[in-house]
Amino acid sequence: MSFRASVGVLATVFLLPATGLAAESLPPIKSTSANAVPQCVTPGRLMAFVKDRNPQLSSEHQKIAVEYMRHGETLGIRWDYAFFQMVVETGYLTFEREKGRRGNVRSSQNNFAGLGSTGRGVAGESFADVSTGVLAHLQHVLMYSGEPIEAPVAERTQKVIEWKVLDSWRAGIKGPMTYAHLSEKWANTKAYGSMIAKHAEIFAEHFCNTPDPAPELLAEARPEQQRDTARARPTAQTVAQSEEAAAPRTSHRPTVSGRELAQRAVEEAQARGETRRSSLGGAGLGALATEGEAPPAATPAIETASLGAGARANALPPASSQPSEQTSPLSPLMQAASTVGGMLKSITQPPPAPPAPTASSSCRVWTASYGGSKAILIKAPTAEGISYTVLDVNEGAEKREAAAYIAAYAKGGHIESTFTSQIQALEKAFELCPEG
Image (cartoon, rainbow, N blue to C red):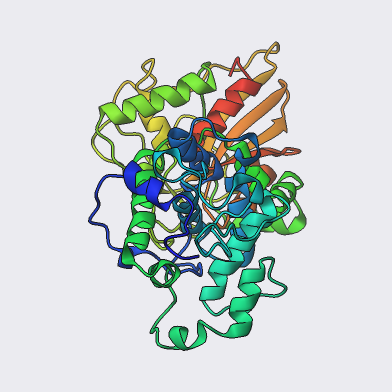
């Protein structure tokens, strides 16, 4: 746990440019509504971040970010900064120091924070697998906050608790325990915390504002949530809720591959100089959960189609009304894609109504929005075949809004899958229904 014994710290110093980042900028250890892990920090993006510096990442570590998210959310901590600490400790999971020299801790130990490695060749503890090693690290981090740890995985954690070596130090800290406090005690130097902060900055700048390259890892990190979502069906309660919730407006999308549509949307947004990260799947590292809170489901708002004049919010009609194809406003994502192929002919004119489906049609792709940044793909039977609707939902109200939409406009439908952005959902929709 000492600075000298950290496996990858010296290697990381040589990998990173000089930084003026202060360790004091690091967030509290325990997560709260005002200190939540940003939505853009997903296992897929984190693994891309690691592989960018370590292209030869070992097979056993390909999904380590899944374990950090899974255990971190269970423990209720800011697991993203624990992940960045792991990157510092292990040298991007190379377990090397400067000039390729091996550190005291080896990859086979599954010890990602140097627990028990006190220098001078002491290797520290070993854990049975990657998941157990990650849990040991996160429990040790949580211990710093004073939170009771039942049956700690690491012997080092158990000893620190029994010896009460942190008690007097912790008592002198006013306010919540932060990663800045942890870093200074962990390594006896503020430089350690600054390195963690620098890695967080690099991730935010280069990976947080890009499409998630492996959204399936998010489902692996939250298996219970995925199962609950997949089983969601309209009930008497959700139908009643749908009468209270505002109905999303729906529009038909032209035939185009999901991947092409997503790529064009990103390019169009960049060409316009658009800087809102939320429209491309990222909220920005360190953003508070209170920023951009979803509006109440009873009065959702979405943006009207605009090609540079700015977006404005319109209240939607009640759920009992039918969705209008001719007056459908577009989501921020589709604003970026709307110029492709001349989907919008002017700022003031709504998109034209799609042609009536023919009897030979087997599937259709639609978009609908409650104004949120997350997306749910809904599959439902129709007279012509199958409809796939990409429904933008608000964080914290995903199930209720999806159930309300299904009850009102997708009878007999179900949630096919969930995504962190509209781009991913559209790509999947057009994969399932190429004719759109």
